[in-house]
Length: 337
Image (cartoon, rainbow, N blue to C red; front, side, top):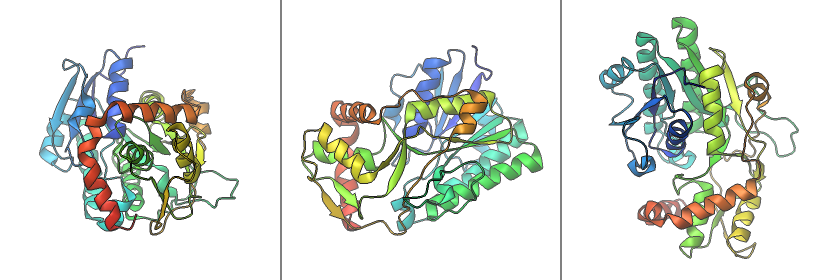
């Protein structure tokens, strides 16, 4: 089926989840042209877009807080998918300033442009806006779960969600929101949990595990996230929020031991490190609304197989991550992690 949008802006499209979405759109929607707007901060990498057809993808190096630039781009677009964000909890605890600027001011700037030009706007958010759940709580997050963010990162994402809802209600911006669980897959920065453990092992460094290792995350392969976002962008009801998840709840220690086993290491071949301040215990997504209304379903439902594919990607692409490894580990050592 032909894309209902001819020219899509993808903010943060050189980052982990954004670049995977760009590849997904170009692979699956042959009529769509994508403009990537990315500031190329430490988490953005132009190499993430290698192989994209230059006839169908335009890269713009710029800041989503640059109102003049954003306005010019939106004047030529009919949709925007907003991935750009500061997203690492540990970084937000160390310095929340860039999180406020990018996640709040940046979203405001984009919404103003969407308002001025009538552009369809989809906002990518996180399940962390809901706070956390007890390990033995049978419930999962739904679209009706009250917001209870607990970190500088999640509080700025909650703020941006509220802006999107207000601009839809007040100004009629054609907006939707999705809150997704933890992603994994290719192009993920090595500061994040899964690629940090994989690349530690590849470098001969013992993996590190926060706290008691019992914290639970609900994992989804980034390709499934991309297909869900497209379904919401093209079929979702304007003004609605959809939760995206793949029923992938795993404790951190179970994930680490699965990585160790897949890489031929002993189950206890890791170091315990100091816990993150205010570390959320459990995230869990109920994506029934998305599946029921839009007919979406994940393809990557075997997490162990997904981990093996992630391990293979980092093993096969050392040039992509090795340059950042020493600085990443130095930062963690300074934090006692």
